[in-house]
Image 1 (cartoon, rainbow, N blue to C red):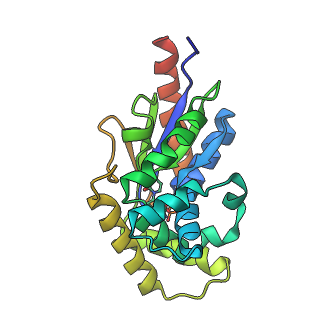
Image 2 (image 1 turned 180 degrees about the vertical axis):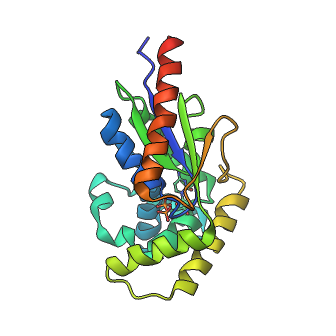
Length: 218
Ligand code: CDP
């Protein structure tokens, strides 16, 4: 039997800070990090580039089968449009199934891993010893995302970013396949009033406590 790995699941809505927190946790605990949102963004962009309709399960599943590691480095995946495409392809069970093995294999690496997404603690790694659900108000998340997009050179109104976030929250939360929801055993981390340093520090304490419990139980 292979040794169980120390998996840290970091879930939450768009621009809650989960991606930055996941990267910092990876550095602090010496674990590799997978941004699973990037997989869905890549499927959305590949489907769109192939002329497929992201709302069509067969077209989006073709996009998922075309996924390669090289695509994940494409800066186009970081755009506002890619986030919307990702959320549309992510409703399809066929797309989610196609991405499951890759995510589970990443999580099973010796020593462990950090994965951030929407369904890591509920579907991908329900037995993860450390689970965080990172949130913030839609207004604060929209402000963060607006600044990030502006930094990437994307010109967009704050009101439009807020509308995107609300639409994506509603779609991600209402879908039948792996909806965005906090796992029952996840620690909630509301970053609305926190700087990223404070949020990362709070996350570190949660993971340290989880690691101590996990080690004691082995
Ligand atoms: O960075 P941001 O939080 O805006 O989005 P992301 O994490 O890159 O995810 C983009 C979209 O992919 C989300 O709105 C979800 O619809 C979908 N997603 C998912 O369904 N499951 C995951 N584990 C990760 C992302």
